Length: 506
Image (cartoon, rainbow, N blue to C red; front, side):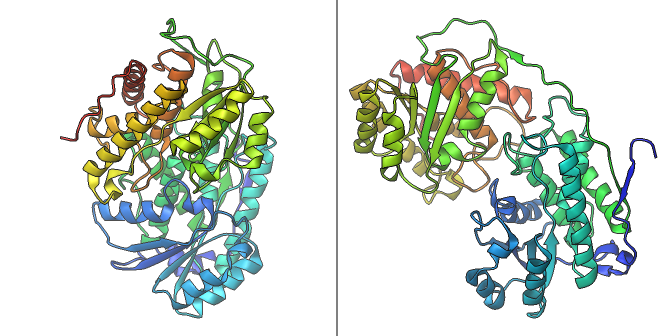
């Protein structure tokens, strides 16, 4: 067939596996408990386990299930994940289904024996190859890696009678033949600059998991973020189509895509309202934790968007991200040495106790660099013990402390936490926004929309210009993107004018 020269995944005997090939077979039932085994390809974006549980609870035919995951962020191979803690969890835990990420044949065999010997159901989650649009990746390598994973997981499923969730195959198909949607990046399933899934990639994973465990089409499953409904439906349809072909044992890998050329966004002409610090050729050093590093990291997103505007601003960025740590743990010899080199015109530090911020300030001032502070936020009100009122009190405390630090030292603070709060208590009139819509679902961390808030706020403070019109890296409704950028600009201007007006929740 012209355009589809590669015939792969044709395996005799696959139809004999009833758990995968009988569409009516349902592995998952009300009240079941699922344990997910995997690294960032399970845990990122708020976690496949969390999104899957929440999605099924909100589906038209809702199911109440339990989902858990033991963090394996630091483990790169499935063999590394075979830890004592995980073995104990599978051996003595109450999980009914264990979904295991793909890996070496030896590691998958070990998990199969462990799980099936205890009367539990194993499902294999066949993950994807590295983002082919990142250097030094190539589509031919992506194709070869996808085929290899599909082949050996297929054989494993046949040998062990284990259902397979072929997520990597679906990623390949969607990237090779992307939905006809304006503005999709070539790697639209990944966080920009990463091989980790974004929310659209997580949608694929949830949909595929649902289809394999229930035997039902995922079309119509609810989405947790406000992506265009037609795009979500197109992705869910494709997931179901690929799964049907996978079940027959016949699938054709499409040719490499020919991505549309990305045209830079021209910023509206506007004079800065204050003298900006940021200029082309500068180096910017980030010191922070997950409130800077999550979602692909501001150190990646910020310079990327600056190159996509006209005129572009070309900067170098570097970072030291201290995952799960506070500011007092970031003032290390390594960080101080990097600051002391004077090679970075701008050092951007996450907010925290004033006494530690002042230690950073002294080091930065000593070499003549400019310091900026990334103001973080209160705890997501949906998981905050005091709800929205505690979120308000936490925001007030953070904002007042940072305004005093800025006044006392002259160090500019970027009021991201204030913008988060304002957008939640007074959201734009866009249908479908969650209460915690700038956060990952039921999580303390920013999602892609929250990351866009941060990038827009950094741009506004560092350049003195409105962020309205900055490019967004995922296909959210344009009216929502504009509303976020306008609100960001309003609050940054108010902050700069010392108008600290934090509205109480209604």
